[in-house]
Length: 261
Image 1: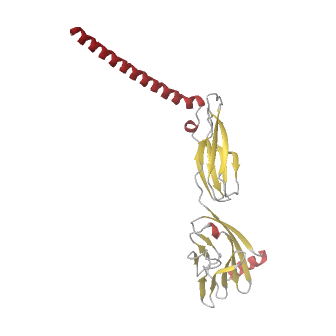
Image 2: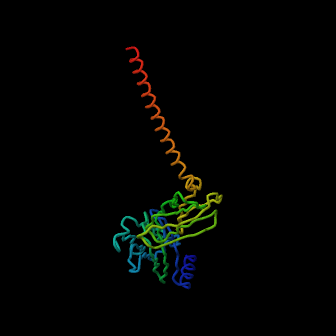
Image 3: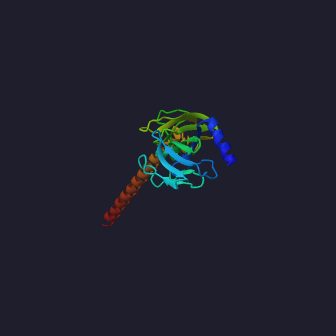
């Protein structure tokens, strides 16, 4: 009891506490009261959002331990769990709509408040690296043009090109109507290790660049085409030679028959 009194007193002097909590969408997050047991003369209230909607409460004296998951708009339905002993609140199967401020109020001889700022991050897709070079018969570029892109419908992620562990460039645009894309120019003989990374504060997705697979000189690009044309011409010539040989054989047979006749 003395420990709880000291804790409440420290909270009272410091004012309203604030704590930031981050969670991946689909996971559970627990907002802790830091109590080992709720005193008999204390009530626990949990409120959410700017409207301070009451979403859970515990009152030892009144025998109340309830969650109100149909407020403010039903977003918490079947997702709130209250620890009857400590008063801690757990939100299960979180979605981005559950982000926001949660206020803990411990009501007794003094009112103690603590605010939790909860961020819920969506799962990130794997970025895609593609070759954006355009070869023509007159192309002589010594570099390979690449672009890394990702379709993303959130505002809290950054797309970056890395050379080893060094950031070369990055982009973060909060525009849900477009996809993130970032260009990169590399030399064909470049031996550096490149990767494209999409990250938010708690997770990342990485795609490593395989230069040998994606980057080819224009000569290499056109060479298979020339080989194919040459192969077709050889087949045509072979076929014509076969036709000519067959025709010659027919003429020879006819000449022999004419001679015998």
